[in-house]
Amino acid sequence: MYADVPGVEELEAGNIEVGIKVLYEQLEQAENGNSSDIWATLCAAHIITLSLDRAKHPCNKAVESGPTYAALNNRGVFRAYRGDFPGAREDFDRARPLQLEAYLEEMASKDVRVVADNNFHLISRVLARTDPGATGTSIARSTAEIEDPSH
Image (cartoon, rainbow, N blue to C red; front, side, top):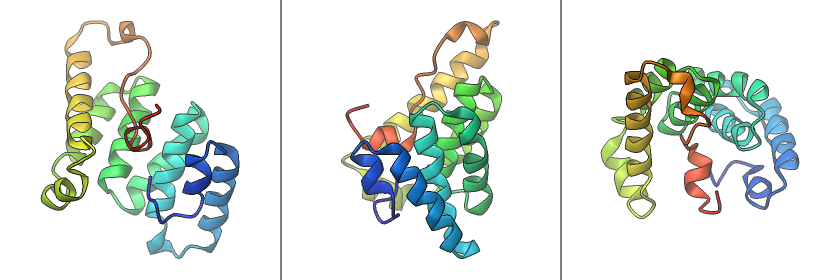
């Protein structure tokens, strides 16, 4: 999630529905070019609540409006939860090289790169199995879950 996006404070405090409401209000006020971070955060918020039907549109809009690391990783997590393992792998694969140097500098203390690599390898292992439905609940993690150690 992006710290400077209105609604994140509410999400981090556990007021998920309030945070989601604030995020949707922000979308109404955002210019087209400034909505990517909001969509990516909405995607993560809906994944955290396991509202996968509600997550689909924000996850796709986040990637359409700005295919950032967070947008691609969060949509990859969404796709993994929905059982679309080839789609999840595609998103994780696209997320890995994006602005890698700047990203690694900023996130060096959070081990986010390790989690993204683990997500990529998890999906690769699942795709290699003959029965991908046998994996049970996804252990792929959204960017919001990575940044909040309580998850």
